[in-house]
Image (cartoon, rainbow, N blue to C red; front, side):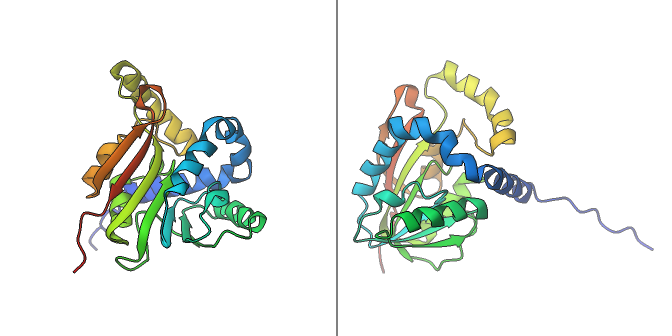
Length: 223
């Protein structure tokens, strides 16, 4: 009887499971853990980003605990996705606290969106593509479901553009990912470009380029 072929686990799948478990584990305490930096800077950056969102149909990738819910414009309809059911449970509570916000939430992997092509006018994500196992694949999926000419709006942290600090972040990236599911040394601006988006504007929000606002658009034209 022939030996059965060995089965090699899909590394991407194992990373996805690791990320899901990490966020499920931290979901209830996540907002408390980030409260200081949220109050100091994040909420200001979120408000500014969402003020530019026009929609009307908007995909929020990685809705998390719903920290963006208070900033959803009244005239847009948001479809939010997240990998973690624990985080989505918190996001649903946020929606209950802000009944004026219009959103539908789905448990979904950013790398494998189940929406049809050209479904949304804009895609938005805040501090998400640091944790998507294959960020370029996730950004390509966001591009696929965004209409030709549609916008991508991101807040992200990434590898510092000061090389000495960047090398420190490179060394910390693996241990921090194993602990939290987050990568701290991603090159997200390059990833956006590599996924096929056309960059419009990149703004440094903090010293050393660690935090960025990234605006891009789908360069395809409608038929």
